[in-house]
Length: 317
Ligand code: XMP
Image (tube, rainbow, N blue to C red; front, side, top):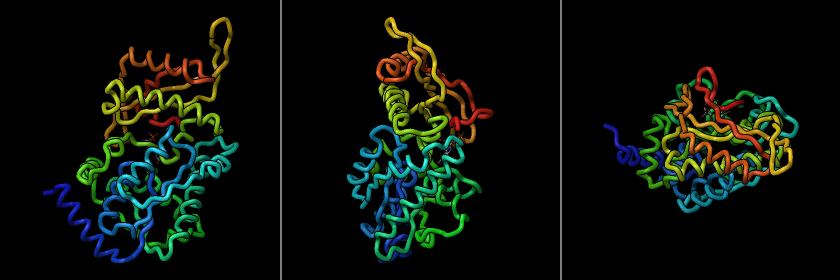
């Protein structure tokens, strides 16, 4: 029967035998899967593994710095790449959700390919693919899937000619978490809510600007910190804020305001295929609304999404 320790021992030996003295490159997302996969590979081959963590400018507030720091503390050989401007440039003027996803996927591959080229003689591409990704024919989750969905676009980047190593491709999510805990990966990474590869770009409805990203990061930060401070974070499968493409009238002092509206979303789910909106306490929602409107410039209204999936999806785009 399966235990995380026997899995780790067996996988580390397998990886050692398979990879030998070769070099491996791997993209990290800050999520559970890629972090656990990288830690396993690192345990097997040490600094023959180079990890690449890309700041696409669409992550949560402070996420890039904090996660990069955790990776370094975990001993991973990780290169942090600030590519914010490249992503913002590629997204400029795009409003269609799929067009935004494609632009982000394309730039991610370009950035990753640039970095992979800097590593001499790399032979393998590490990926955090887990079992449900293998059985789902079309998967949209994580940077690994971003790579897959672009597989047949022609003119493959060089790193795609690498052999793929996927140490988690027989595991379910809860097993990945168990392995991660046994590997002593920080709980801030293991217990983290899922976060989409395209990040805040699909939570800003309409076109993306740096200023909108900053606004949404502030709102999202207040909400997520609020969930943590009130002991609600672990009762929610995924949560976040959405910046709506409308303005509403408000009043502040004697002044009429005409500012942005944000939606908060929190859902319960097992695998993201179906989801129920969470009945967050009214007191908590009221507190979040006040805090957001008082602290985030340019936002004068907060609404709460009470739609389940299906028929709504978790993301709004
Ligand atoms: P939906 O909105 O389809 O989301 O109900 C289900 C789960 O998938 C995530 N999601 C994505 N993840 N790239 C990703 O890596 C994407 O383009 C994408 N779209 C949705 C979403 O956050 C939720 O966990």
